[in-house]
Image (cartoon, one colour):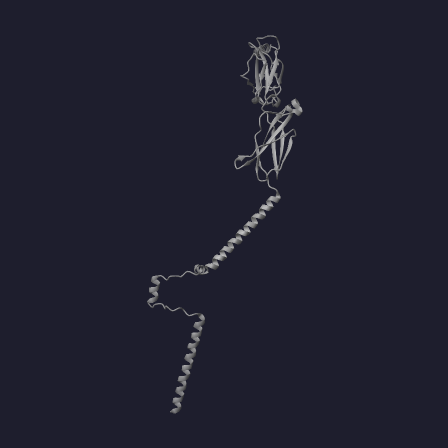
Length: 317
């Protein structure tokens, strides 16, 4: 019983679903220049059109998990839509509606640079001594396919000086690689680029890229040599001034370098004056040995003299 109920519900849903998509979808949905346009399936003026977009072009419309957004600015009766710059890279889909009945979705191609007047070239910069190498690339191939040789790059660059800017220089080229020569080493240069379409500006100006031009090896060596010469001259001058001042004020310098005079504290002076410790300096070891030797000599001589006197007295008796 339950199985028959489930089968009946599924058949009912399928019948309702088939009835929902009973309208014919829009025809010939495509992007022409800056407009999304399509053709009505029938000559029925009462049909409405629902328009949605997906920001990223990397999607699979067969997946049900993709998020789509309604284009609220679109009037349901119109057969076209003006594409603005914020829709770059987006994909549109449109369907017919009448009451509760709708058609299947019809999808457009993704929005390219040729469909919106807001694209900028992709700018890359590398610098070398006295030169810069600029690489410019397209965001996509639509401009080249649409306009061919009528597309060019307007490259501008200028030097930044102490917060100010020099006069900008312009290079108009169709090449994607450009060399800029005769740039001043050690200076900061900024670059930006814009499309030219039929010799007129097209799209937006790219963000500026700035870089300092490196110095040549010869300039670095010359500066190092100059610094060494200046340093040697400065050291020599300082030494000469010091010698001159020392020669001119040698007496003051002599007094300045004399050892400090030590003052004996008062209580030490009283101790020395009390007589408990001799004030005279202690004799040196060499002097002490000499005095000891002299004392021994004096004692020996007097002893011999006394002994000689005693012998003479004995003889006289």
